[in-house]
Image (tube, rainbow, N blue to C red; front, side, top):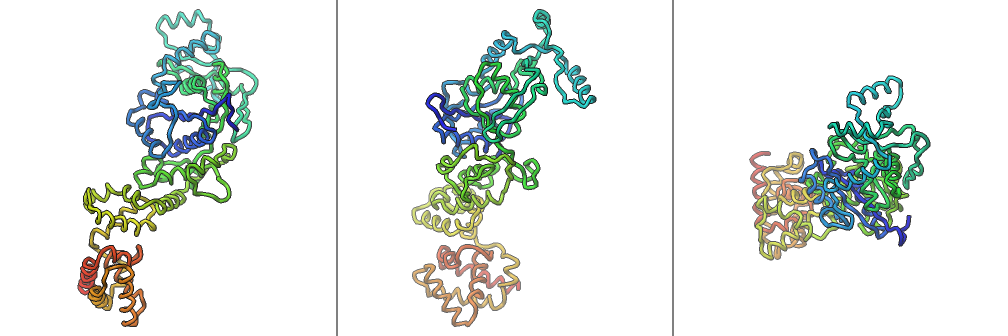
Amino acid sequence: MTQTASAPVRVRFAPSPTGSLHIGGARTAYFNWLFARKHQGVFVLRIDDTDLERSTEASYQQILDGFRWLGIDWDEGPDVGGPYGPYRQSQRLEIYRAQLQKLLDEGRAYPCFCTPEQLAEDRARAQQAGEAPRYAGRCRHLPREEAERRIAAGERPAYRLRTPESGKTVVHDLIRGDVVFDNAEIDDFIIWKSDGMPTYHFASCVDDSLMQITHIIRAEEHLSNTPRHIQLFDALGAKVPVFAHVPMILAPDRSKLSKRHGATSVQEYRDQGILPEALVNYLLLLGFSPGEDREVLSRDEAIQVFDLEKVTKHAAVYDVKKLEWLNAHYLRAMPPERALELIWDTLVSRGWVDADPDRERLGWLLQVVRAVQERSRSVDELADSMGYYFVRPASYDEKGVRKHFTAQAAERLEAAARALDEVAPFTALRVEAVYRERIAAWNIKGGELIHPTRLALTGVTVGPGLFDVMALLGRAECQARMRAAADWIRANV
């Protein structure tokens, strides 16, 4: 699809502020955003808050914050305005009422006075007959005079769209091709509830029409609603947008993704230390293949390669390992200054750093970040892995103790600590040189000194290069920790 001067691309994402921003919604929003940016179009953020009981301001703000964190911006929306506002559906009720009246005047909609009990009986009767439940049409041919009399008497009807009783409705879908629905299977559905509020179907189509949305990119589960929406567009006298239904996101066991599979909301991923660039990169791969075995793409590269017609029809399978891998990639690639900024509040709250360190201390902190960045998979892991640079080990890894903390190791740690007096300046290269001399003089394998030293200094058996760790800790701290470990070995092994 290409942009034309007469019909610029206009897409929208319309979340309900009734909970947190789900990863599925974020993926749909990102695909809309990519499509708009690819075609120099407009991305509209519209808030579907007509469910007044469940919609909350906190959820609304969380949605906005989630998109801002992900770097998904919008050209029109409740906070930025635009020519087709307001962009919160709860503020557009007069617009919906006017459009409903227009459909009533044209005979395209009608009031329905059926009670819930009558509708339940109709459903039960259809099920007994082995038919799909649908509205029986009880009020379809009700004379207008009778309907007006009942409304004047205080009855509050719902309103239904008068749909075609024969023929077919074809959904032209950019991803799935043509999908054909039999009109006989589509009943006169409710577009306005008896409580005085529009249904999702009606409000959405009115807004898409008035906001001149050209493409509707949404989740696969909405496909079954689409023939109704096409009939609504027709009734409203509006041009039918182009549809594209993106595949569902399934859990690894191919069940519906839920909290039992791990994080499902953008906020949860953020809280777990996932980077926004990693998450949007991962969202791109959920149902779309960039080709050429590419998996790591910047936003500009994603815009360049994105094509709705190359989105897969089959479900995308959630793979947390891939997300963690991407997160580790972006964490390793970022400047240490930004990595330090991401963990700064954590370091301060743990008492590891002063809120306003001097220049020398700040330089040392950046060196520590560089040392641990390569092995960290998340922001939280980055902060945690720095712990032993600030706090002496309170315990030692059990497996490491059994393997490396021997009586001989205690003596070697004491001797190596004394040897560190000879190192000047105290750099990684000079420390390594002294260690190699000790190893050769004692005629032992390098690991017989290096592994006990690492365990003594950090409490664990893996981490950055030992001599880099020692240089960052400094001579006095290394000696203190090595002697403390030697004493611990003598007392416990």
